[in-house]
Length: 343
Image 1 (cartoon, rainbow, N blue to C red):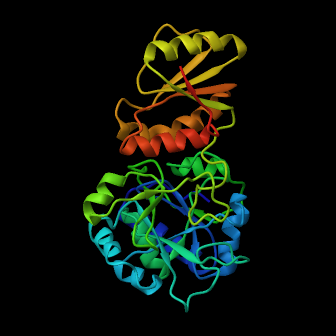
Image 2 (spheres, rainbow, N blue to C red):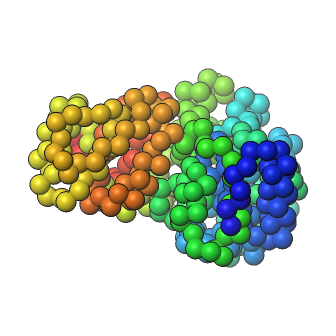
Image 3 (cartoon, helix red, strand yellow):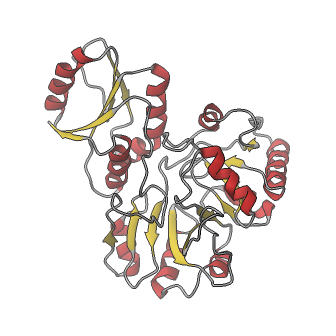
C-alpha cells in the first residue's frame, strides 16, 4: 500500500503512526533514508524478519543491517567495541555508515541475518533521515532493513520504485518521504578488529574514516567471501534487466566503441556523465550528472529507467575510482557482473 503523498503535518503524522503500527504488528514497511529506500521489520521478530527475505527473494545467508534511532542503542547491541568505533559514531552518526560489530552474547543468535541461521556479527546504522528516525522511534524497536528492491535489482530511491517491484500483499506499507539525498547504500565498515575493514564503499569514504580514526583501513575482496558479514558482498546486485558493461576510457574511445557495437542491438542504453553527440539513433543516453554526488544520486533511477525503455544492452561510462567514485564504480561493476572493458 502506497501512503498518500500529502506534505501537511497531519498526514505525515498519520502515516508515521500507521507505519509504526505495521512494524509493531510484525509487518513490513518500506521507508526512505538518506541512502536508498529500506524494507523494514522489527529486528527482534523472527517471523517478520523471515518475511523480508521471502518478499525480496533474498538468499538466506545475505545479512541485514539493523537501523537504530539513538547512539545509546548501539551500545545495547555491540559487545565491547574498540575505542576508534566511538570516534566514528561521534563524527558520522546519524549518517551513511554501517558498523559491523560483535554482538552482545545475550542477543538472539540469528539477529542480523535470517532466523534459520546464526549471525556472529551485526551491522548497525543510525540513518540521517528525519522520517526514518521518526519511524524507528515510533515503532519502539530497532528495525532490520535491507534495500527495498527485489533481490538483484537496482536499489530504489523513490517510493514509486518500491511500488513497481512488489505485488499487492508482499509488503504492507510504503512510507512516502523525500527522495534519497545520497542515492547509493551506506558504507559498510567491519570494526570487529584493531584495524577497520571496508566491506562496501559508500559516501563515507576511506580517507574520511582514516582521518577520524588515525588508523589505516583495509579493503576486503568483496567477491571472495563465502560467509558474508555485510550485504552486497556475494550475490549479483543492482542489476538492470539488460546485460551491462562498463566502458573505461576517454570520451572519444567510448564513442567509437558504442558506434561499433550499435549494429548488434536493436536499442542500446548509454549511461554517462554528460551528453555524448554523434551516436546512432538506436542509442538512448541517460546522463547521471557531471560530478560524483549527482552521479550517485541518479544512478539507480537511471538503471531502472533503462528497464522501462526496454533496451537490449547497457553501456556505462566509467568514472574516476577515487573517494565517492570508488563507491559508484563498485555499484557499476556489480551491476555489470564485473564486465569492465578498457577502450
